[in-house]
Amino acid sequence: MMKEKIISSAMNTKILTIDLDTRAYDIFIGTGLLSRLQDFIPDDVKKRSVFVITDENVTQYAQTVSEAATSLGASKVEVIVMPPGEGTKSFSSMQKISEFMLSNGLNRNSLIFAVGGGVIGDLAGFCASIAMRGVEFIQVPTTLLAQVDSSVGGKTGINTAQGKNLIGSFYQPSAVIADIETLKTLPKRELLAGYAEVAKYGLIQDEEFFKWLEQNGARVCSLEQDAVAYAVEKSCRAKALTVEADEKEHGRRALLNLGHTFGHALEAAAGYNGLLLHGEAVAIGMVMAFELSSRMGLCSNDDVERVEKHLQDIGLPTRAAYIDGLSTTVDDLIEVMRRDKKVVSGNMVFVLVNRVGEAFLSADVPEDLVRAVLKDSLGDEEKGTKGKWKSKFSSHS
Image (spheres, one colour):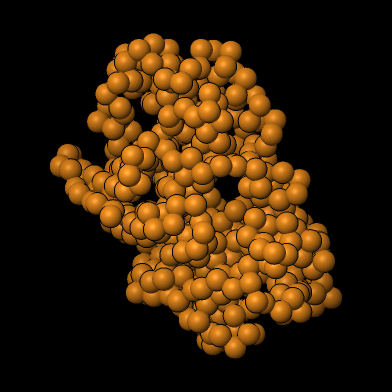
């Protein structure tokens, strides 16, 4: 059962413990955590080789981790800097990191830090899971998306030409250190993309939280400290409880994929080149999931409009037609969706909703309705709906 406590310091730090028997670990949430990393790094780091995997955008945080490990007596510390962006989650990046570590003293007693957003966390975690058949690693998420979702729960992996995260493993970190002060250096577009994953928790199982977001989402995205801390803690608690109940995604955990079947297909179509961020694709996908549910007679159209309005008000795209430069077809997207990890016995599995806060899984979804929803989201160039996002949302410029 998940435990939580607050430890006293200059600023309060919330600790949530994910109980996975011998693989239990803590999620530390607070401000200024990177300035006192020695409180969270394992005591036995002395004489261990440490590898810090990061990207070009957050090298300052990687340097902080490196200096902390060195001061605690690590035998050596190597920093591996990768290009930012979804394109880095690749076979070539995995090979580059793995070969570098193996050539620089990696052993089963080494410690790996993943310092960055979801891309670095997924990539570094996967490298940790396969190196020496498993090396300890710690997540240090520096984006909102990573802090509320991808750093927690042990999903690691890389992308392929066939789709997103199709190569990967379940491999839990030994700790997650979420310093919300790192969000101050996050580009606005990345911050908004992370917000989509925050909203997801309210949409699938907690309408009261979604109501809170409707009132306070702008405060979260303005990085008001109390609002951000609450949103991160609430999201991590929801994720932790879900992972404890269903670590390997055989049932309940799959609800966290609301909008992801649609979203992953859009990401693949966009090419993992920055045209469409993961959280942006999820926002569009969640609207499509509600639209599909409405067309199936499950939720009301008022729910669809409510969700779309909130995400638009925050500054997220809600239709594929808003993405200037996205070139794809319904058939292309269906083909990608058929290769999704969630396909069972040839049937696409969707997270559907009865209302805001009540989601469920279904493989019994008429394909003609899926196609209709995709067509509606892609829009019609003759009606001038293509590529409106840049003018509609000034955050994407």
